[in-house]
Amino acid sequence: MEGKVIVVTSGKGGVGKTTASSSIGAALALEGKRVAIVDMDIGLRNLDVVMGLENRIVFNIVDIVQGRCKIDQAAIRDRRIKNLFLIPASQSDNKDVLTASGVARVCKDLKAKFDFIIMDSPAGIEKGFENSTVGADEALVVCTPDVSAVRDADRVIGLLYSKSLSPRLVVNRIEPARVERGEMLSHEDVLEVLSIDLAGLVPMDEKVLISSNTGTPLVLQNDSKAGFAFRRIARRLNGETDLPIEVPTDKTSVWSKIGKTFGLK
Amino acid sequence: MLQGLLKRFSGQKKSSDEAKKRLQFSLIYDNLEVNDTTLKNLQTDIVDVISKYFEIDKDALELRVKRDEQVNALVFNTPILHVKRKEV
Image (cartoon, rainbow over all chains, first blue to last red; front, top):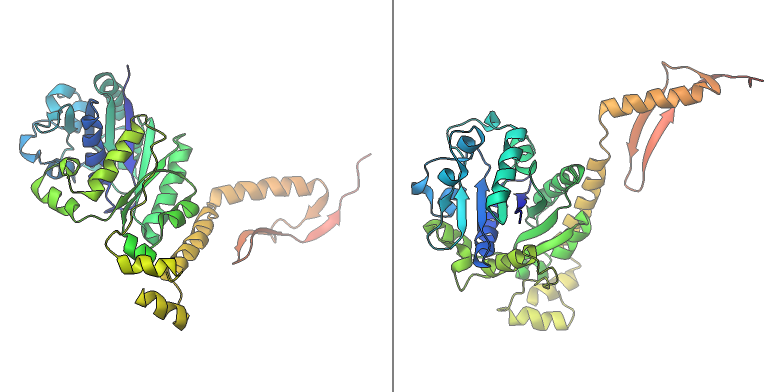
């Protein structure tokens, strides 16, 4: 059966695309799927360090597209999670080195070898974004609950629709206590503004930074709230479409709960 | 809860509500940003249609998107020189 290409994008940088790509990819592999995560940020690669595979790079995506190596030579196998592979970006090349037709052709080849191909798009809406979306069957838009990320998400959603992709949203770094205090947009607010389907809600989690410090997969940690959220998103992408969306809650704050019962938000 | 109490009695607004409102406005504005080529093409089309019925001053006409807090409108303003006679 042919695999599926999913592009992870956002417009704005620093909202968690790379974390989302690596975590959802790893979680899909844990579900038993064969997964390749492709770093499309040519010249500014990062997925390799986040996944802890930086010292095993031989070839990269540019080498594949330009025919200098085969897919199997460039794909780095993760030793902790079975069936998880990383295809790194090139660090030395210019952003414009890839052509859309070249990437589209490689996506086709990748679909023959993997069940899921996650394209980690660079920030922005220029050529890197075009190349990341050209072979995509599905799209995930990542945004955080702040005005700039939501506005950029809206722009990107429009662009994806014009490419006949119907994106789904991942709201990242939700801080339930601040939402409750009215200091942060709630996921309902974000959804209402963007009017788009939801793929999942991910709470703010200190474990994300720690797992990237050591290059260990977030989804393998038993105590990561964000890791659990990404695993649920992966299950949804893997066909469990009726898996309910879990809304992050602030379990520690008893007082705010009592407050809420009395209508004091 | 204390903060909630304070906010309730001081009448302080939630900043998240303001964020939402500002976002909704800015997105409408963003989507209304029409590029010049589209506007020019639209103008040519409108002039063609109106010219069938009226003689208009093509140099004095004005076409723009007017934005307002309540409504957004497309404004086309042109002086009419003559009404054309119906062709029999």
